[in-house]
Length: 611
Image (cartoon, rainbow, N blue to C red; front, side, top):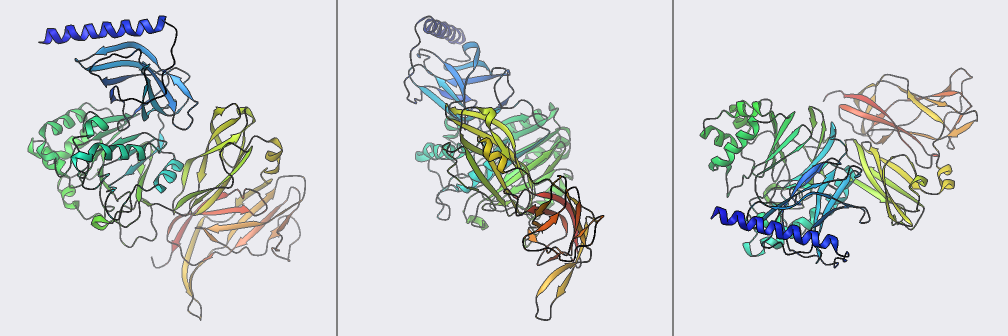
């Protein structure tokens, strides 16, 4: 039987090679612009993407009963710009692994630009497309961001559909990848399982990042394999960071799956990673029981495999109570147990009724994943609520204008470096693009008359940022930064104490005076209108004094402060706020007469008496 299978595989391979060779010698024919499901793509898929470097090879695996197509050509199409298409090099023609399982070795050209790509397979008679299947990076970052999405339960009365706000916010945060730990739909029936997975993929295909998907209790496992990935269990590496995905649900508890547990032990024993994340749907730590059932000490296994984070889905964020004793008994003192609340409006099992997502900011061996929520009533691993990060286009941003402006708003008590915005401008020369208050990351050519600009920007806490992109030199000159240097010339430690007025108004007053120095670096006099905020709240500027010149007694007028050429002025501020909590905060300075109101940011340490 094995000999027959092998002979058949060789015959099919030769037939395929002859067919492909024949197409190469004949005049090229245009492939019909229709999407067909001729192949079942096994790797890479939308649920198990590949992150590669330029000139790096990867396996393209698929299943087909017959390889009866004129050709198989695989290309990358940029997820943001359809015109950015790169044909992959076939290192070898398709090779049969089994009767109907095939593999090709593909390579990205050396000059492939960074980006997220759809995989497009040209079959001559039509094409197949795998959204967000490949991400190309010139190097693996030591500082990067990824996002965790949890239980969505779409179909529950309180969650009629996926939350589009997640798309805008997460795309703005520009994660390297997204992990989604299942329970996408509610009470899935086998008859509509494939349709539900297709709806999930359509939603996840709107993210500008590759996604790694798990199957949950409420999802249909029977259609997971043909729709998402061949196996429930999977793993991938981002540089030295290792991620292992477990199949662990109430219907398939991992403690009863010794084969999976042994596979995990094997994986961790041979792992040379900086750290490992174990990812699963179920949050009750059945893995620890499963390890003990095969005579393995969880602490020893985790330590050998450098497991530092256990990442699960849930209805609510973890409050440090559930399963805390189980973690303690297993002596997992250096392992973080993380649970993220629902990424939808679902209110099932205590869900808050608004979508949440967890942002992981990784910096070598340090990982930040808890949002410092000042309003939290109880101690918990807070994740981020949707609606707090927004952007406002001040024009159509559709490629019809040479100039576009964008405002980003962050009302969260957390800053985000390296966010990404997208501009579509009228223009043909990428060199003509100029940007203010951000950094150009990449420019893509949409067509002969339009350009797409990807720009990076830092988004401070409780603040907004205005950005301008243009291909018009005259506009660029109008938005030059003011020639003013801002420095803080006092202590960066601020101590507040509660105060109450005779009328009962309560507020917090600082014991220290904050002093800022403004220096005019130009040879012309300037009039500036400075504004100062702390924790997003405006501070009152007292009378300024010019250094090395006479005292100014008029104070800060409504039309601003005069800055002589080459001179500095000191601004004195006695902070008074309605509310603030102890911790690291930001003083932010901007000028009303700066068209983009660019921020200068100073970290300060705040202490509130009585906390």
